[in-house]
Length: 401
Image (cartoon, rainbow, N blue to C red; front, side, top):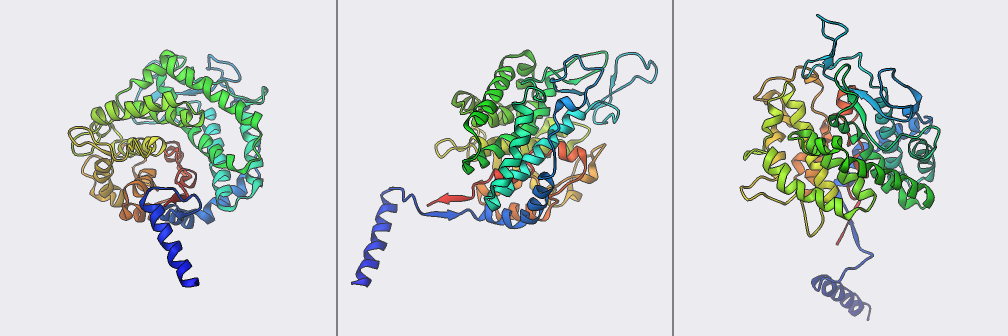
């Protein structure tokens, strides 16, 4: 009788699977997530332990006399703009690729700090399911989005200003890619059940307002229409915030823009990004744009509309994009173009394109290379251009069978 029951149960399982009926209680551990968790566990728990000691620091902690905004307005200055040595009091002049260390970036650094704290705490929560990480994260979330004494206004009207030329620019919108891991972290921690409904509603309301500004203000429209990595990053962050706020319309807009504009206009037939390769930092910019496109795919792909598998009519696709850059991520010495004018030695690190692509496209070599690269970069330029720093909150832990 016991043998018959085993045979019957096995036959029933096969029947359910073959007829497409979901068996809700059976899931397979995602091997990519398992490898990532094994690789990152010790680092994540160290980061989270440090984050447990950190008090919130928002845009109200420091101000700049050159800002045209108020205390609650995010302000930054264009990286590649410098005083004119011939006329010190005249408008700044541009030196592409060369960062001016005297420009005001305190708000950007505060936002990166916020992002790293939430990413670490959310990752630690996924690994341990300890609610203490969620409670600590909420202190920072309230300070940035809810508390009227310390919150940031939901716009970037004064970002990447240029002394004597602009009080803010659309190009500055790229600074809020740092908020993507904040919303991803919130989604990861929402499963804890201890985040108050009012708090979540307040944060989603903040991002709804920011999305409205991003899609209607002239600065937002300028950035959306940028023909290089800035246009990619507009889609990437709008996608992240639209997923968080359950804005299906904007999610579909971003999918369509990825398929109909970003891929065909930015990627060449061989998988390269010609616009980025023409810059003074071609290696770093090519990596950055590939990471951004990969993150869009990670955010917006669905079983019925998988951006990872999408190809333009002439064959441009994400697999080709990662395959083009992969040899140079594995061995930078084979790079056939000029070296970057700054930060050449600091790249590559554990780029999200590798782990996302490995997960979506079943490429174990990409995952192995990702595991061997640097997971805890210290250089500020690298950190700023690596907004996905905690992949455990981005990669699915389980895959249903």
